[in-house]
Image (cartoon, rainbow, N blue to C red; front, side):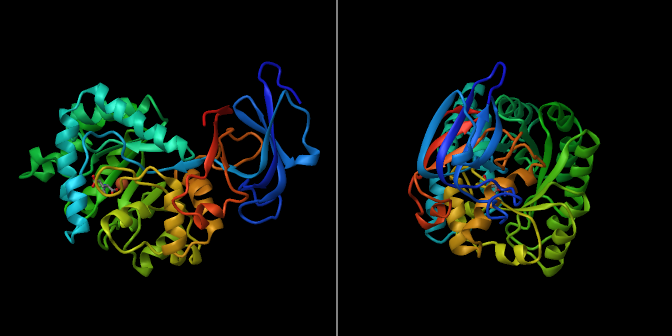
Length: 395
Ligand code: NIG
Ligand code: FE
């Protein structure tokens, strides 16, 4: 097998290959192939199958009886920030409740930071995530809350990912505490104009203490008119209109989904909006877990992501989130691994990542374990021992 200008590599002797193609292997949603091989041609997957049938290639890597799966797709993070909130976390672990107000601490630190400091912080957490198998990530603004600070956050993020989200509506800026309507006008007007060129998505924190349903609808509709597609922080801290608004607006994802009525679950089951669950947030705020089982049983597409941010979920580890989802949210290991790969891709409306299939991006994770189940079976153990991103081995 050869590309004319690219080199080909076969990874052989894979004990369990997760393809996420149910027409392959064991015909399960994960499309598991045993004793498998994968061929990479340039930055794409060119072939999958059994090792004994693998075509000849320029290079050969022996997986040594370990598992290979698609790189994780972390479809929800907040990585353009400065400072940390160690004291707030400590206070929470002594019994204080989490509230959206803590975001103001990070806003102050982020505004005070230079572009270089913000970018260095971002790349530090991206490297951390990459070492744990994340090959695609989304990230948001939301800690600037001025025209200049939001647009620079997006500019910095856009240098590192295509999946950039404008979250000027994270909370009402402290500068507008007495006039939230004026802040919504800014977010839907001058700030949107400055931010839209740098982003693919628009998000809003629809929650008591942040933005109500009417404000959220106005913000997302304004974003859509500028070519940004909606996603929503919905039903995280309390019941509310966010999830149903997400489905109404065909948002790619409703994120958190911790407090859901039956009508919310029905709405998600009837539309194309993915429910993105973020167990790092419930872990770090000692909150009730989202009920993944209820959503899956209703036929909802579920994604799992980190929500990595310095306030509510300071983890960049998708494997940690998989373990939490299996232990505490009613997911099977297969469902959790699917949610962290194909589910994340669905939440970003991508079909070139989150699967190991011909034509997909060659984003792969090699585990120091014979199967993907070990991600939940061996919690806290650094099992990721190899990562390919766009066909290049980076770990
Ligand atoms: O997704 N919910 C809103 N935003 C973040 C928290 C941000 C923060 O506390 O700094 C979240 O959990
Ligand atoms: Fe978030």
